[in-house]
Image (cartoon, rainbow, N blue to C red; front, side, top):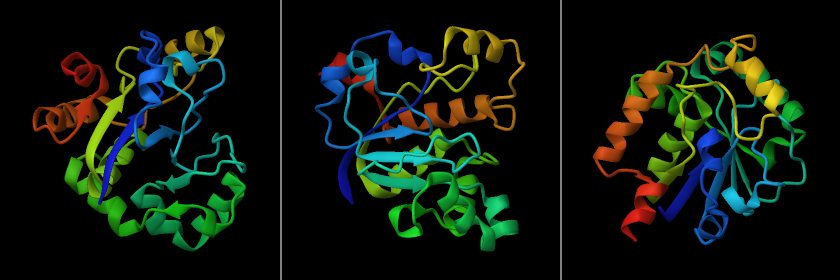
Length: 201
């Protein structure tokens, strides 16, 4: 088991503080789906060792990414279309199957059972995966789409459209359930919120 990981989600709360220099000092930094770094370095740092993604249609491929790529496909999809998933995922990521790790159907089912959440978001899956692979897990920018549906990198127009429910982002997920589950992990000290860690250090 590796030592520590900092998972940076895509919530707009990441733009409240300029923590880029602090973030870049962490041993392993993971980012999620269509994260953007250019222009946001002062807030979220510049390093990325792990790219967590859901292999979805709107995913922006990163064929030049040199770190570790971990792909979470929902259990129900893996169960129905397992034979087609590798080909589809490789095409969407523009990567060969040996250039990324597709989390197994059994492990995805385990994540659902552990969290009691059907079809967890990529963010929650990244936390669950990290619990199996790292001793210390830090998280930042997990807003759970509770106040809005935008990401920190969205344009102002896209943010307005998303929050008018024109774009169906996150409707398939149990955002409140995920928030409560992650809060429980924080209370049990199994994961640590970056902002709280910095207050104590």
